Picture 1 (cartoon, one colour):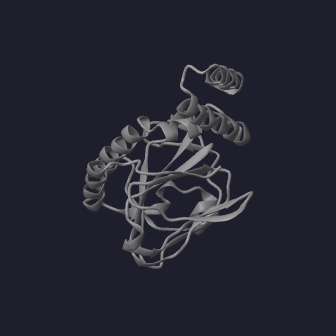
Picture 2: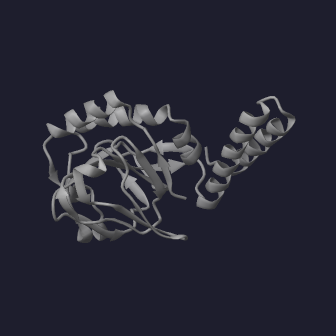
Length: 227
């Protein structure tokens, strides 16, 4: 399940993050790579304990916490603190699968990577190339969204960042441990949730079918959730 989250960041939030990361001290992106990723990765990254990364990450997390689409799609249990990377001309990240468990060296936080998220901080016109390419059951999908938008996708999928051929691609990326470990179960709950919301809009929240289906949703969530 690959889901675009439009306008995750508001105008002021995006401007502040861009100000922070522009002044940050970028280092080799392989500081957080596993063995497989290190063979494929060529980019820059803000150290996760840098003041710029910490403040910018808090802004991203605050935006996620108030975004209904993200919450419905991810059903988050734990969120790895946001990281920030940059790709200049000629840089890329070859095909890989994210590590199953991410451990933050600074705090020891462990997060099972059920979902990966990329938050775009530069607009598509500001760089060429740099598409996030995700291999799904429905074929290969390429994603290049406006600044402030995000995309959520299974961490188990093969994915890559295509070479940047002009400009600079800057983004935030991190991982989510969902209350629902299974991708198919999570997709079912998301589809059910969106259908209930649509029905409630048409028929009203007090409609008997809306009430019954809401009960089905929560009973399934209760059955499948790790929380």
